[in-house]
Amino acid sequence: MIKHEMSYRILYADTDAMGVMYYANYLRVYEAARGDFMRKTGLSLSEMESRGIVCPAINVNIEYFRFAKFDQEVKIISYVEGVPSSKLIFTQEMFDSENNLINRAFVTLGFVNTEKFKAVRCPEWLSGLFKSSQ
Image (cartoon, rainbow, N blue to C red; front, top):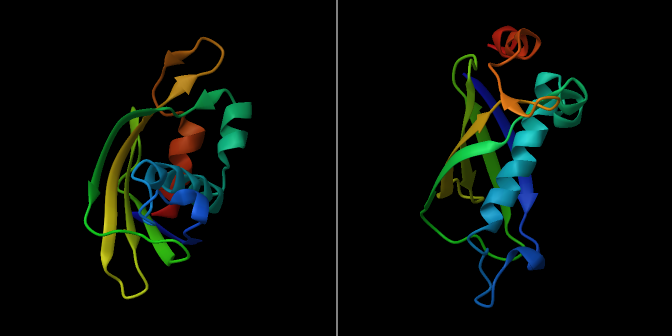
């Protein structure tokens, strides 16, 4: 399992009229954490795209346990178990400063060749990064 941690402070723009994080903005923050995760494994999402591969979300399941509030600092932990083959599956969790679980998402990404815009298996050059990081 590869694990990555990122800190984030809830912006005013992240919140709704009740002063809590708007439900869809969790996905935007998780996207930022996945980008940071990939950079830390040695390959940014823009580098992947330049090599002809993009990873669109094909399934998202999100669970809400508590509210994240304006100006609150949170920690996002992202996990990938195993080496991807046809899908890249992330588990992502958001915690408050007291380590209470705020939110959890399971995000499944596919691999798409940008030239033909068709689904492909995970390229060896990408799966190798996951093998070497375990």
